[in-house]
Image (cartoon, rainbow, N blue to C red; front, top):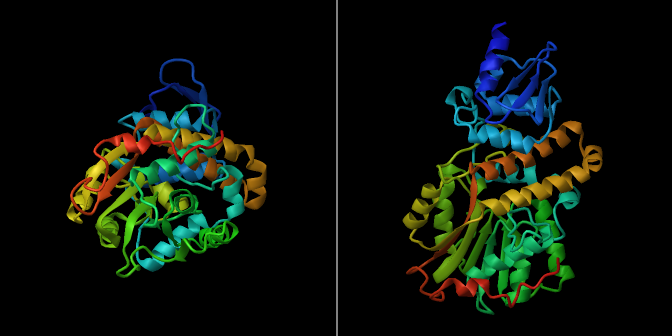
Length: 398
């Protein structure tokens, strides 16, 4: 009886939309006003102490193992929870435990490989042909994912105002589309670094296949270990979310160190405008070591490292749309993913993608591009932003 009372109170404070809940004892309740489009079914009770310890972990794991089934949009359900100030996402009574994090070089390798080295064949199922695993940039709602990803690549590179023959470092280069585009279309000499063996092997093969050995290289190397080398430009996409709160200052100090005087960097990453945070379930199952820094936190580190901010651009709605497309693609290949892994993995990854979309949709997280320089702000850049929208290089087919 006390357990059921807890659930009724807990769920009544969780959502700002009508939701039907089917309990393990055969009873049902509707929370909220109106006709629900979403039904949550508990096949058995989750211990109250587990929910109190960390509700995100307890509920996420229950969805993974099938204890909880959701009929309807997980994205809409979690958006409602993010938008409700009284939900477990915002109530410290339900966040007593968070997985421990370390960000030594050894731990960083393990964390990155646990996520990115689960197989290029897996990512190839639901990413586009560029194998780009970060926020796309939709110039029009009709842009395909491939077009939007190439839009993003060109948008980032053009913000640097790159001059042919100069050098670029891509910190956390992923599967290499940005760095190789910079070499082919902009005449830059590029270096990419990653801790993912799968990405390193893939980029190396792309360099050979595209005949770029003279102008491109990739290294399996930690961003902290580049010595005294310097580059004219630096890009880093979706990287600072992995370095840990305690290393953010060092990350931006490395950017400053590796930039030549008057060099320009474009740093693109997930940022919370409300302040930094992490999520227990994501840390445990998806991104070990992940931390989303706050906007003020990032800008403070940028300034304290001796860099100056030239421009900032939020792209929250673009990432929401990107993740929604990824989830559609993922669900179109559920059977193939289940054969690669198992049904628990399928439910886990679907939850992860829809939860990310909800987090962007609700404004819980954002993604921001920081254009920064080593030297007086924008001294080496044009006076207006018009140069960022020059379409000379970015003609791609839908």
